[in-house]
Image 1 (tube, helix red, strand yellow):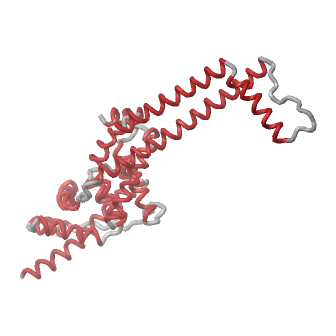
Image 2 (cartoon, each protein chain N blue to C red; image 1 turned 90 degrees about the vertical axis):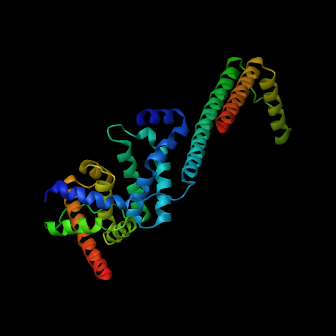
Length: 188
Length: 127
């Protein structure tokens, strides 16, 4: 269906582009926001990214998904906005096993919160990660991209993605654990 | 704990981090920008097309002048001023262009192409 719409747009039926805007605007905004951390700038970047995608639609090779290709544009535009040339592709990351107890505790404590509180705490936890960690977590767990797709979108090697993902996840659980502990203390 | 279990818990937690664009006009803003960009591209390609047509038209005129052995740069008396020489040249050029049925036909063809293009742009604009 997407390839049919792409063909029609290239042939001049511009109205078909609204399908892509509707389908990808929210995830594109999530990606841009996780990098930039500012609502207005993230929205502007998403607009620019859609325009860039439209201009270079004829160059889109169908060997990857449209979403992967488009999110790559969003990531690059967001990095340009915050004046970072590219993501850190180094792989010298300390690999420490996550404590299973923390994950289980955080998981059950998190579930017991109201939806509004869950949203609040996950935003706080993500806010304490760096933009790269937030981006990788969002792509893999929220958008359900595979490691290969995350690698293609970010331009980071697959092995490095795996390690960065583990580190980001661990960091997120540590922050959530601390925040939820203090929340429990406050309630008591 | 199995890795798939950790992944499931993490996924459940991160589902709440999904963001939504609050701007209700977002789609129309993007589509307006895209339509405007499309017009710009069309204008650019149309300009190129017109330039190409005019270059071909010019070459055609030059070949025609050569074919009929017409020399527009006639020799003028020495005492004629530069302005008079230019006016006389333009006058003979006008005679050649407007007095020749083939050139008239070409000008009319170009005019028709121009009108058709304008009409199609207008239809596109309102579609």
